[in-house]
Amino acid sequence: MPSLKQSIGSKTHVSKDDVCFLMSTTIIVDELMQQIEVTTPEMVYCAVTTVGQREFGMAMQHGLKAQLTIIINHDEYDGQKQVEYNRKMYSVYRTFVRDDGDIELYCEARLGVN
Image (tube, rainbow, N blue to C red; front, top):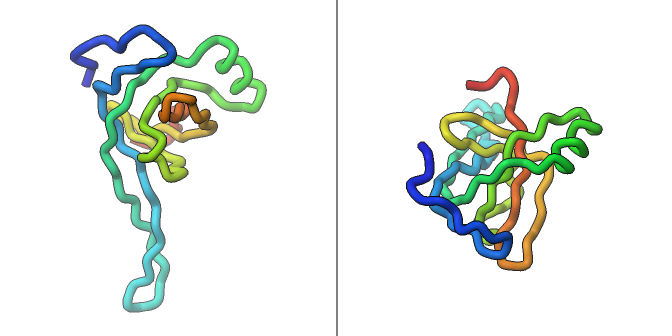
């Protein structure tokens, strides 16, 4: 779903007018004592930006293909490694904590998913 309004074009203030889903994974044990992995989505408000040329180049050096940066409130992030945005799954390969209370999630597309 595209944003209905543009982000305020400043690095210090970002308008979180979009949504994404942080995917939390937990392991439960069933009645047969088998471990089952359960993934739970958590909806959060976000702002999505493109990855800069420098970040793209650094990611390529490590064998990653940087796709986008998702900015969310730092308090809502608990180390999740998967994010769903626009019905597409992404892996979080790096994070950056900002001074304004937000965190940037640097994401790459997950191959073989969707």
